[in-house]
Length: 183
Image (cartoon, rainbow, N blue to C red; front, side, top):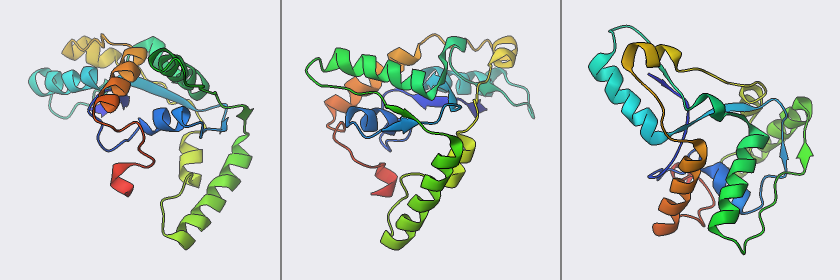
């Protein structure tokens, strides 16, 4: 199976949820205009895995992304996250990124971040590879998985973000500063 960009509860490594934490902390100053992600609720994707194991054909690949309307450009994705954060924490000021940075500028930032990371032996904030892969929309459809497996994502990206926030609030992860795997 080929999962979309998963969000939702029980992300203990702080993977894609790092977007939520960084936005909440006001640490996303800019976005690149072409970045687009196939946002998916982790529970829908997990259900898709079960369907692939029980109904899938050997040797076939199945894309398990979210709902079609949840193929979002980074700015749109962050806007939804900001709306959820404002609902969950009405007193917190949540600021969306102010700048749109061209790919060439982001690439130079990634190169500089890699040098700093090598010198400090800390994970880079941005990499050239991340800039390259994030410079284009990565929008996908689960049409084949729908036809052959009966996969129908039923949860929205907004639900995934709200559930991820609630889960992290319950277990004290809202103040995490890095991915657990990098700590």
